[in-house]
Each structure stands twice: as structure tokens, then as C-alpha cells.
Length: 247
Image (spheres, rainbow, N blue to C red):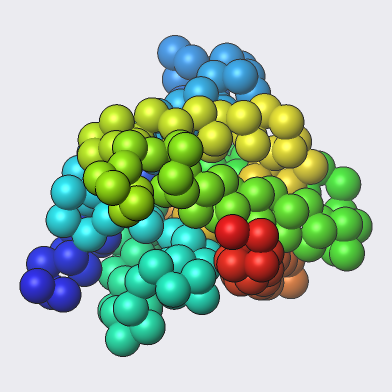
């Protein structure tokens, strides 16, 4: 059972990164028909990317697709601690595979953008609009904390149907409010750092950027890489504690 759940976490995260990083490529890389489409397109597509991953993995694994979400659910008592590391491993591997597939899909366009190494890196992982590490960390902390808190809140009585006093999830319909949450966070809070909110969305593709034979690429900005990992993890953990305190 756990193996099957991890396979679906891997697949769901792969699809999330394939479509999410895919829109970054579409809007950024030279000779793309969508080049210059802008922030609204990116935030909408990232929301839909999460929705597609949730549709795939939700019925089997619950579709965490994010180590920060898995940790937050475990801390809130909604997920077994014994499954945390297997889920996180599956998510990280899925993010890496999705990023490799994105590169292969857009390879001709990466080659056409070889003189813009920063733009190519941005197709894989996040970078701050203004590099101010403490505030960049705060941005990821707050955005991911709000994400995890809202995911937990969606399952509470009043936001979900109930059988007696037991909240009942919305099934596949649960993907839609999460999609709206991702879009809202991206549009409102994402412009400072690119709203990673997910180590599997940032660190895994960053590793893919480091190892793939991308012509003209720069370094993978490892000096910043800890921010979109620790920020989301700390934000998710704090949100779980606050949720327990309030609910």
C-alpha cells in the first residue's frame, strides 16, 4: 500500500513540475509561441499544474506533492510519521524526473536561449527579484505557512461535508479550492521570490539543472538554494502548530 502511494506521489509531483516548469519555459525561452506571456499566465498555469497532480495522486496517496505539506500534515496528526520519509523521497524524485522531461521537451528552445543563462535557470527553480536573504526566507515562510494552513482548514467542519461529527473530504472537488489557493498565493505573494513553497518543486529541478547537459548554462545558484527549502519546511511546520492551537 505504501509503495503504491509513493508511486502516485512520484507521478503526481512529476506532472506538477512538468506543467509548472513547462509554463516557465513557455513564457521565457526564445522562439516559444508564448514568450512574454507574463506573470498572470504563470500563476494560473502553476495552479492548474497542482490541480492535475492532485487529480492523479489524490485518490491513492492524498496528493501531498510537497515535503512541506507532508511534514505539516504529520505534525498536525493527519498523517503517519512512518510514511513521511518515503513520501518525501518520492516527491523529490518526481520533481527531478519532471524537470528532466521539461528540458527534453523544450530542448530546442533552451538551445535558442543559450546566451541567457539566468533565464534558463529560472525555468527550473526560483530566484528572488531582490536578493535580501532574510526577507526572501520570510516570503517563503509566510507563503508556505499560509498554503499548509489553508489545506488543513479545507478539511475542517464547515469547509467539508460531515457524516455526523466526522468531516468528509470533497474527493476530486478538493483539487479546485487548492488550485485557487495556489493561484491566489502566486498572484499576491509570489512576486518576491517566485513562490517555491515546495522543496520538490525547487531543489529537485535545481539538481536537474546542475546535471543536465544544458548548453550555455550558469551555476545553479546553490548559495540561495537553502531558502526555498528551509523557508517552506519551517513555514509548513509553524502552520501545523498554529492550526492545532486554533482548531
